[in-house]
Amino acid sequence: MRGLVAVCLSLLLCAAGCGYTLVRQSQSLAGIQTVAIETPRNDSYEPGVELVIADALRREFLRRGAVRVIDASTGADLVLDGEVHRIRTSGRSFDSVVLAVEYELTLSLALRATRPDGSRVPIDARALRETEIYSASADVEATRKNRQEALRHLAVVLAGRVHDSLAESLAQ
Image 1: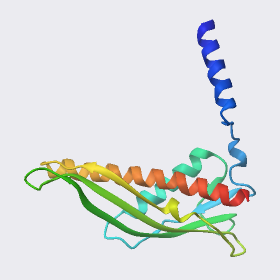
Image 2: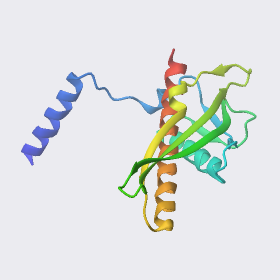
Image 3: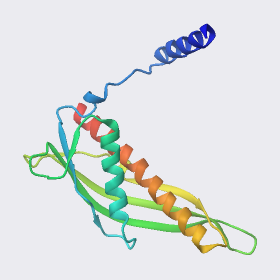
Image 4: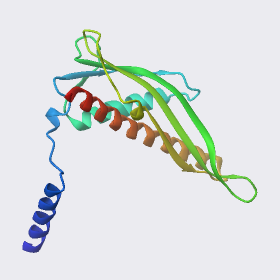
């Protein structure tokens, strides 16, 4: 037991020496108490992707716990809205018969964070686009499921980046 405590303590001290610090979640979005996350408009040809994006954003803000997520945009300290620009799927790697082995899925968003006075909080453009690779299969249903999982993963990654970008912008 003492060995485990010593290892944990030494890891904690090493992490502190490397510049890592614990961040209080309540300070991650300076001055913002409530956020309204509107479902983005879907400009892609992927039905329902806007719901996946909105759900990932809401979950990320709730998970971080720094602000209260509310439904109504009136009365919110910050309103997050925008569009799903496009989703591009392309073959990534191929076998000797020129059948796809992997696909690459790219998701591009255009999100805006607006304060009640109409001013915008900038979101880094790099936080709004990401690519994920998923496996192809001879089974069409397996390929479809792999694509859906890749899309959900992209939504989660982008939601985290959007939150981080907002926290950084608001801290300045």
